[in-house]
Picture (spheres, rainbow, N blue to C red):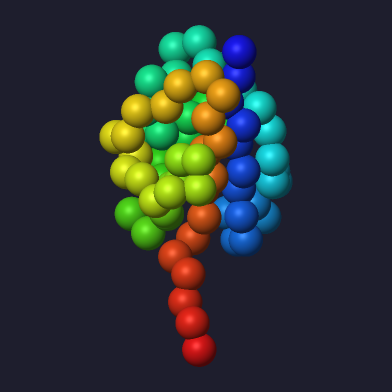
Length: 76
């Protein structure tokens, strides 16, 4: 069982990764997923979505979820 992870925009460039899957074992929150893809602490501006809905880093994840990380979105 796994969790699909998507990384967008400048975060993708920074991490050198745009998409991956992680084994769901021992992943309980979006923070755990972040820790599984990066050794860096997430900047306070990093946003997270679980199954295409905005979430918090403390939000629960489960096998089969899609977790996306992205920088703040600006318009213009």
